[in-house]
Amino acid sequence: MPTFRPDLESIPRYVPGRPIDEVARELGIESIDKLASNESPEPPFPAVIEAVASAASTLNRYPDSSCYDLTRAIGSHLGVPPDAVWVGAGSSEILRCTALSVGGPGTSAVYAKPSFVMYTISTVISGSEPLEVPLTAAFDHDLDAMLGTIRPDTTLVYVCNPNNPTGGIRSGVDVGAFIDAVPSTVTVIIDEAYAEYVTDASYASMVSLALERDNVLVARTFSKIYGLAGLRVGYGVGAPELLAKLRRTQAPFTVNAPAQAAGIEALRHQPEVEQRRVENAESRQHMTDELTDRGFEVAPSEANFVYFEPDIDASVLGDALLRQGVIVRVLGGGIRVTVGTRKENQRFLDAIDAVGAEHA
Image (cartoon, rainbow, N blue to C red; front, side, top):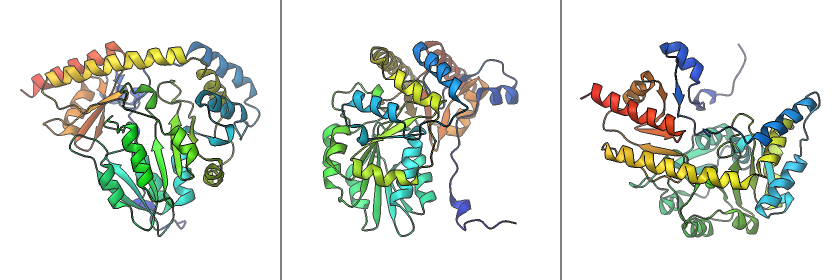
Protein backbone atom coordinates (compact mmCIF):
# COMPACT_ATOMS: atom_id res chain seq x y z
CA MET A 1 0.00 0.00 0.00
CA PRO A 2 1.46 3.42 -0.94
CA THR A 3 2.22 6.03 1.69
CA PHE A 4 -0.06 9.06 1.73
CA ARG A 5 0.16 12.39 3.51
CA PRO A 6 -1.24 11.90 7.03
CA ASP A 7 -3.93 14.57 6.69
CA LEU A 8 -5.24 13.37 3.31
CA GLU A 9 -8.60 12.23 4.68
CA SER A 10 -9.18 15.64 6.27
CA ILE A 11 -9.14 17.39 2.88
CA PRO A 12 -12.76 18.03 1.88
CA ARG A 13 -13.73 17.06 -1.66
CA TYR A 14 -15.64 19.41 -3.88
CA VAL A 15 -19.05 17.90 -4.56
CA PRO A 16 -20.41 19.29 -7.85
CA GLY A 17 -24.07 19.56 -8.72
CA ARG A 18 -25.35 16.22 -9.97
CA PRO A 19 -25.33 15.78 -13.76
CA ILE A 20 -28.70 15.67 -15.51
CA ASP A 21 -28.03 12.26 -17.10
CA GLU A 22 -27.13 10.72 -13.75
CA VAL A 23 -30.35 11.88 -12.10
CA ALA A 24 -32.42 10.80 -15.10
CA ARG A 25 -30.95 7.29 -14.95
CA GLU A 26 -31.41 7.00 -11.20
CA LEU A 27 -35.00 8.22 -11.02
CA GLY A 28 -36.24 7.22 -14.45
CA ILE A 29 -37.28 10.80 -15.22
CA GLU A 30 -36.84 11.90 -18.82
CA SER A 31 -37.09 15.66 -18.24
CA ILE A 32 -34.66 17.19 -15.74
CA ASP A 33 -33.85 20.85 -15.09
CA LYS A 34 -30.55 21.54 -13.36
CA LEU A 35 -30.56 24.66 -11.19
CA ALA A 36 -27.73 23.66 -8.88
CA SER A 37 -24.42 24.87 -10.27
CA ASN A 38 -24.92 28.56 -11.10
CA GLU A 39 -24.31 27.89 -14.77
CA SER A 40 -25.57 30.34 -17.36
CA PRO A 41 -28.90 29.22 -18.82
CA GLU A 42 -27.70 30.72 -22.11
CA PRO A 43 -25.03 29.08 -24.27
CA PRO A 44 -21.87 30.92 -25.33
CA PHE A 45 -22.35 33.70 -27.86
CA PRO A 46 -22.41 32.30 -31.46
CA ALA A 47 -19.11 34.00 -32.33
CA VAL A 48 -17.51 32.37 -29.29
CA ILE A 49 -18.61 28.94 -30.48
CA GLU A 50 -17.04 29.70 -33.86
CA ALA A 51 -13.79 30.76 -32.16
CA VAL A 52 -13.72 27.52 -30.16
CA ALA A 53 -14.28 25.45 -33.30
CA SER A 54 -11.46 27.24 -35.06
CA ALA A 55 -9.08 26.75 -32.12
CA ALA A 56 -9.86 23.03 -32.09
CA SER A 57 -7.73 22.59 -35.21
CA THR A 58 -4.63 23.36 -33.11
CA LEU A 59 -5.23 20.69 -30.48
CA ASN A 60 -2.17 18.74 -31.60
CA ARG A 61 -0.07 21.55 -30.11
CA TYR A 62 0.33 22.67 -26.52
CA PRO A 63 -1.54 25.91 -25.75
CA ASP A 64 0.25 29.17 -25.05
CA SER A 65 1.11 28.71 -21.39
CA SER A 66 1.44 32.48 -20.91
CA CYS A 67 -2.04 33.10 -22.38
CA TYR A 68 -0.48 36.10 -24.14
CA ASP A 69 -3.44 37.20 -26.27
CA LEU A 70 -6.10 36.52 -23.64
CA THR A 71 -4.08 38.34 -20.98
CA ARG A 72 -3.95 41.42 -23.18
CA ALA A 73 -7.63 41.18 -24.05
CA ILE A 74 -8.54 41.09 -20.35
CA GLY A 75 -6.17 43.95 -19.61
CA SER A 76 -7.72 46.05 -22.37
CA HIS A 77 -11.24 45.23 -21.17
CA LEU A 78 -10.47 46.24 -17.57
CA GLY A 79 -8.09 49.08 -18.38
CA VAL A 80 -5.15 47.46 -16.56
CA PRO A 81 -1.62 46.54 -17.71
CA PRO A 82 -1.20 43.01 -19.06
CA ASP A 83 1.32 42.14 -16.34
CA ALA A 84 -1.42 42.80 -13.77
CA VAL A 85 -3.49 39.91 -15.20
CA TRP A 86 -3.03 36.23 -14.33
CA VAL A 87 -5.04 33.66 -16.29
CA GLY A 88 -5.93 30.26 -14.85
CA ALA A 89 -8.16 27.24 -15.36
CA GLY A 90 -11.18 28.91 -13.80
CA SER A 91 -10.96 31.22 -10.81
CA SER A 92 -10.70 28.08 -8.68
CA GLU A 93 -7.15 27.56 -9.91
CA ILE A 94 -6.31 31.15 -9.01
CA LEU A 95 -7.63 30.55 -5.48
CA ARG A 96 -5.83 27.23 -5.05
CA CYS A 97 -2.47 28.48 -6.34
CA THR A 98 -2.67 31.55 -4.12
CA ALA A 99 -3.31 29.37 -1.07
CA LEU A 100 -0.38 27.14 -1.99
CA SER A 101 1.89 30.16 -2.47
CA VAL A 102 1.13 32.01 0.76
CA GLY A 103 -0.05 29.20 3.06
CA GLY A 104 1.49 26.13 4.63
CA PRO A 105 1.89 24.60 8.08
CA GLY A 106 1.91 27.21 10.82
CA THR A 107 -0.32 29.63 8.86
CA SER A 108 -4.04 30.33 8.84
CA ALA A 109 -6.67 31.64 6.44
CA VAL A 110 -9.86 33.58 7.26
CA TYR A 111 -13.11 33.38 5.32
CA ALA A 112 -16.87 33.55 5.83
CA LYS A 113 -19.19 30.59 6.29
CA PRO A 114 -21.22 29.70 4.37
CA SER A 115 -19.19 30.84 1.40
CA PHE A 116 -17.47 29.23 -1.58
CA VAL A 117 -16.32 25.75 -0.54
CA MET A 118 -13.05 26.13 -2.47
CA TYR A 119 -11.77 28.42 0.30
CA THR A 120 -11.89 25.52 2.73
CA ILE A 121 -10.46 23.05 0.23
CA SER A 122 -7.61 25.36 -0.81
CA THR A 123 -6.78 26.18 2.80
CA VAL A 124 -6.57 22.56 3.91
CA ILE A 125 -4.67 21.46 0.80
CA SER A 126 -2.08 24.15 1.46
CA GLY A 127 -1.62 22.98 5.05
CA SER A 128 -3.06 26.14 6.59
CA GLU A 129 -5.60 26.28 9.40
CA PRO A 130 -9.09 27.41 8.36
CA LEU A 131 -10.64 30.18 10.47
CA GLU A 132 -14.34 30.38 9.58
CA VAL A 133 -16.46 33.41 10.45
CA PRO A 134 -20.29 33.09 10.38
CA LEU A 135 -22.31 35.41 8.17
CA THR A 136 -24.52 37.99 9.81
CA ALA A 137 -28.22 37.32 10.41
CA ALA A 138 -28.81 39.15 7.11
CA PHE A 139 -26.58 36.62 5.29
CA ASP A 140 -23.78 39.18 4.78
CA HIS A 141 -20.04 39.00 5.40
CA ASP A 142 -19.30 40.14 8.96
CA LEU A 143 -16.22 42.14 8.01
CA ASP A 144 -15.59 43.41 11.55
CA ALA A 145 -15.64 39.87 12.91
CA MET A 146 -13.33 38.75 10.11
CA LEU A 147 -10.86 41.47 11.02
CA GLY A 148 -11.01 40.34 14.64
CA THR A 149 -10.30 36.76 13.60
CA ILE A 150 -7.04 37.57 11.82
CA ARG A 151 -4.11 36.23 13.86
CA PRO A 152 -0.36 36.86 13.63
CA ASP A 153 -0.05 33.64 11.61
CA THR A 154 -2.80 34.56 9.15
CA THR A 155 -1.52 34.90 5.59
CA LEU A 156 -4.74 34.87 3.55
CA VAL A 157 -8.25 36.32 3.78
CA TYR A 158 -11.07 35.61 1.33
CA VAL A 159 -14.03 37.91 0.69
CA CYS A 160 -16.63 36.57 -1.75
CA ASN A 161 -18.50 39.57 -3.16
CA PRO A 162 -21.25 38.76 -4.18
CA ASN A 163 -21.18 35.85 -1.77
CA ASN A 164 -21.73 32.30 -2.92
CA PRO A 165 -24.11 30.71 -1.85
CA THR A 166 -26.20 33.55 -0.38
CA GLY A 167 -25.82 36.18 -3.12
CA GLY A 168 -25.38 39.20 -0.86
CA ILE A 169 -22.85 41.99 -1.34
CA ARG A 170 -20.90 44.38 0.80
CA SER A 171 -20.58 47.88 -0.64
CA GLY A 172 -17.44 49.14 -2.28
CA VAL A 173 -16.94 51.51 0.65
CA ASP A 174 -17.18 48.66 3.16
CA VAL A 175 -14.80 46.37 1.27
CA GLY A 176 -12.31 49.16 0.69
CA ALA A 177 -12.28 50.02 4.39
CA PHE A 178 -11.84 46.34 5.23
CA ILE A 179 -8.81 46.07 2.95
CA ASP A 180 -7.33 49.20 4.55
CA ALA A 181 -7.61 47.55 7.98
CA VAL A 182 -6.06 44.20 7.02
CA PRO A 183 -2.33 43.94 7.88
CA SER A 184 -0.12 44.40 4.83
CA THR A 185 1.43 40.98 5.49
CA VAL A 186 -1.89 39.29 4.71
CA THR A 187 -2.97 38.61 1.12
CA VAL A 188 -6.62 39.56 0.53
CA ILE A 189 -8.56 37.78 -2.21
CA ILE A 190 -11.70 39.56 -3.36
CA ASP A 191 -13.62 36.89 -5.24
CA GLU A 192 -15.76 38.65 -7.84
CA ALA A 193 -16.95 35.58 -9.77
CA TYR A 194 -20.49 37.02 -9.92
CA ALA A 195 -19.61 40.70 -10.32
CA GLU A 196 -21.10 40.97 -13.81
CA TYR A 197 -24.57 40.21 -12.42
CA VAL A 198 -24.63 43.02 -9.84
CA THR A 199 -27.11 45.88 -10.29
CA ASP A 200 -26.80 47.51 -6.83
CA ALA A 201 -25.18 50.94 -7.23
CA SER A 202 -23.32 50.62 -3.91
CA TYR A 203 -21.21 47.77 -5.28
CA ALA A 204 -17.71 48.43 -6.59
CA SER A 205 -15.08 46.13 -8.01
CA MET A 206 -11.74 46.16 -6.22
CA VAL A 207 -9.73 45.89 -9.46
CA SER A 208 -8.40 49.45 -9.25
CA LEU A 209 -7.48 49.01 -5.59
CA ALA A 210 -5.68 45.75 -6.38
CA LEU A 211 -3.34 47.68 -8.65
CA GLU A 212 -2.47 50.07 -5.82
CA ARG A 213 -1.74 47.44 -3.16
CA ASP A 214 0.79 44.64 -3.14
CA ASN A 215 -1.41 42.33 -1.04
CA VAL A 216 -4.76 42.42 -2.90
CA LEU A 217 -5.90 39.99 -5.58
CA VAL A 218 -9.23 40.14 -7.42
CA ALA A 219 -10.47 36.83 -8.85
CA ARG A 220 -12.85 36.70 -11.82
CA THR A 221 -14.23 33.99 -14.10
CA PHE A 222 -15.68 33.39 -17.56
CA SER A 223 -17.75 30.49 -16.19
CA LYS A 224 -20.85 32.49 -15.23
CA ILE A 225 -22.33 35.30 -17.32
CA TYR A 226 -20.15 34.44 -20.33
CA GLY A 227 -21.39 30.84 -20.32
CA LEU A 228 -17.98 29.17 -20.49
CA ALA A 229 -18.17 26.90 -17.43
CA GLY A 230 -17.27 23.86 -19.52
CA LEU A 231 -13.98 25.34 -20.72
CA ARG A 232 -12.50 26.38 -17.35
CA VAL A 233 -11.01 29.81 -17.74
CA GLY A 234 -10.72 32.57 -15.14
CA TYR A 235 -8.23 35.18 -14.04
CA GLY A 236 -6.78 37.23 -11.25
CA VAL A 237 -5.89 40.92 -11.18
CA GLY A 238 -3.23 42.35 -8.90
CA ALA A 239 0.14 44.01 -8.63
CA PRO A 240 2.66 42.41 -11.04
CA GLU A 241 5.06 41.65 -8.19
CA LEU A 242 2.33 39.79 -6.31
CA LEU A 243 1.23 37.78 -9.34
CA ALA A 244 4.81 36.76 -10.12
CA LYS A 245 5.03 35.12 -6.70
CA LEU A 246 1.58 33.55 -6.66
CA ARG A 247 1.78 31.91 -10.07
CA ARG A 248 4.89 29.90 -9.17
CA THR A 249 2.58 27.11 -7.93
CA GLN A 250 0.64 26.99 -11.21
CA ALA A 251 1.28 24.07 -13.54
CA PRO A 252 2.02 24.82 -17.21
CA PHE A 253 -0.58 24.62 -19.98
CA THR A 254 -3.60 24.59 -17.65
CA VAL A 255 -5.73 26.83 -19.90
CA ASN A 256 -6.35 25.08 -23.20
CA ALA A 257 -6.38 26.77 -26.60
CA PRO A 258 -10.18 26.70 -27.14
CA ALA A 259 -10.68 28.25 -23.70
CA GLN A 260 -8.25 31.05 -24.50
CA ALA A 261 -9.92 31.72 -27.86
CA ALA A 262 -13.35 31.69 -26.22
CA GLY A 263 -12.32 34.21 -23.56
CA ILE A 264 -10.88 36.61 -26.14
CA GLU A 265 -14.03 36.51 -28.25
CA ALA A 266 -16.43 36.64 -25.30
CA LEU A 267 -15.01 39.96 -24.14
CA ARG A 268 -16.00 41.52 -27.48
CA HIS A 269 -19.71 41.14 -26.70
CA GLN A 270 -20.37 43.53 -23.83
CA PRO A 271 -23.81 44.68 -25.08
CA GLU A 272 -24.93 41.05 -24.92
CA VAL A 273 -23.40 40.73 -21.44
CA GLU A 274 -25.41 43.76 -20.33
CA GLN A 275 -28.57 42.19 -21.73
CA ARG A 276 -27.89 39.03 -19.75
CA ARG A 277 -27.36 41.09 -16.60
CA VAL A 278 -30.73 42.81 -17.03
CA GLU A 279 -32.60 39.59 -17.81
CA ASN A 280 -30.98 37.80 -14.87
CA ALA A 281 -31.94 40.62 -12.49
CA GLU A 282 -35.56 40.47 -13.64
CA SER A 283 -35.76 36.69 -13.25
CA ARG A 284 -33.91 36.80 -9.91
CA GLN A 285 -36.41 39.31 -8.54
CA HIS A 286 -39.32 37.25 -9.83
CA MET A 287 -38.02 34.13 -8.09
CA THR A 288 -37.37 36.10 -4.89
CA ASP A 289 -40.89 37.54 -4.91
CA GLU A 290 -42.52 34.18 -5.64
CA LEU A 291 -40.62 32.38 -2.88
CA THR A 292 -41.36 35.21 -0.45
CA ASP A 293 -45.05 34.96 -1.29
CA ARG A 294 -44.85 31.27 -0.41
CA GLY A 295 -43.55 32.11 3.04
CA PHE A 296 -39.81 31.57 2.57
CA GLU A 297 -37.19 33.99 3.87
CA VAL A 298 -35.00 34.66 0.84
CA ALA A 299 -31.55 36.20 1.17
CA PRO A 300 -31.09 39.41 -0.89
CA SER A 301 -29.10 38.39 -3.97
CA GLU A 302 -27.04 40.24 -6.56
CA ALA A 303 -25.83 37.06 -8.27
CA ASN A 304 -27.45 34.54 -10.63
CA PHE A 305 -29.02 32.50 -7.85
CA VAL A 306 -31.24 32.82 -4.79
CA TYR A 307 -30.77 31.27 -1.36
CA PHE A 308 -33.31 30.43 1.31
CA GLU A 309 -33.50 28.33 4.46
CA PRO A 310 -36.75 26.30 4.52
CA ASP A 311 -38.72 25.41 7.63
CA ILE A 312 -38.28 21.70 6.90
CA ASP A 313 -34.95 19.90 6.59
CA ALA A 314 -33.19 21.31 3.53
CA SER A 315 -31.96 17.90 2.40
CA VAL A 316 -35.51 16.54 2.56
CA LEU A 317 -36.80 19.42 0.44
CA GLY A 318 -33.89 19.07 -1.97
CA ASP A 319 -34.58 15.37 -2.43
CA ALA A 320 -38.29 16.02 -2.94
CA LEU A 321 -37.54 18.62 -5.61
CA LEU A 322 -35.16 16.17 -7.26
CA ARG A 323 -38.01 13.69 -7.60
CA GLN A 324 -40.00 16.45 -9.27
CA GLY A 325 -37.22 16.71 -11.84
CA VAL A 326 -35.52 19.84 -10.50
CA ILE A 327 -31.92 19.71 -9.26
CA VAL A 328 -31.07 22.36 -6.63
CA ARG A 329 -28.08 22.71 -4.33
CA VAL A 330 -28.50 21.81 -0.67
CA LEU A 331 -25.91 23.55 1.50
CA GLY A 332 -26.26 22.79 5.19
CA GLY A 333 -29.60 24.21 6.28
CA GLY A 334 -30.14 26.21 3.11
CA ILE A 335 -31.02 25.72 -0.54
CA ARG A 336 -29.44 27.61 -3.42
CA VAL A 337 -31.32 27.79 -6.70
CA THR A 338 -29.72 29.03 -9.90
CA VAL A 339 -31.67 31.53 -11.98
CA GLY A 340 -32.46 29.64 -15.16
CA THR A 341 -34.67 30.26 -18.14
CA ARG A 342 -38.23 31.41 -17.48
CA LYS A 343 -39.44 27.89 -18.18
CA GLU A 344 -36.91 26.38 -15.76
CA ASN A 345 -37.71 28.92 -13.06
CA GLN A 346 -41.42 28.23 -13.36
CA ARG A 347 -40.83 24.50 -13.17
CA PHE A 348 -38.91 25.02 -9.93
CA LEU A 349 -41.77 27.08 -8.46
CA ASP A 350 -44.30 24.48 -9.57
CA ALA A 351 -42.16 21.80 -7.94
CA ILE A 352 -42.07 23.79 -4.69
CA ASP A 353 -45.87 23.96 -4.78
CA ALA A 354 -46.16 20.24 -5.51
CA VAL A 355 -43.84 19.34 -2.63
CA GLY A 356 -45.74 21.72 -0.34
CA ALA A 357 -49.00 20.05 -1.22
CA GLU A 358 -47.49 16.63 -0.45
CA HIS A 359 -46.35 17.78 2.99
CA ALA A 360 -49.52 19.73 3.83
